[in-house]
Image (cartoon, rainbow, N blue to C red; front, side, top):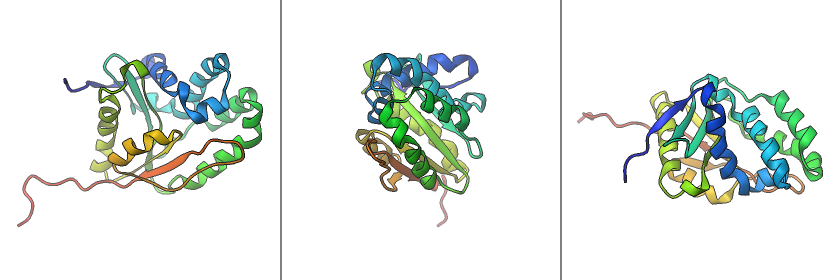
Length: 203
């Protein structure tokens, strides 16, 4: 199997890179708790992706693989989501149960975020028709290179327990479980930078 080609997405690639993420999250427990109606999901989830991870495009830390079969949006240290837009969107469009519990979820998520500089992965997703080809692993490996090179933490929240083994294989460790009221569980995970081996180790 050929090695997947990873490219950096710019603002002009935004819609194309977000599309596979929207497809990938169409069965995600947290995403569909927020928008259980299919039409509402397709209407609002792309804007949610932009609000939470869209700053990655301007900072050249959004990546896509093989003609937009999948994408990953990473936020560099000191770069945050558009929280005001995020809150307004959920308040305006979220389901009734979400309105009751989502801000408790956001509060707990904030408690788990590292206080020290870190890379944050809001989204990684592969078009379901393209899954099983190693695209997720390739996107993850590509983005973790600067984490190890610069000795910086990486952090994410897995909203689907099925994805936890993938993240663990790449060095992430489970920190706990976030759950408020009727919300599905969300799993914060942290990765410490790995020490890269030198070509000529000391003897």
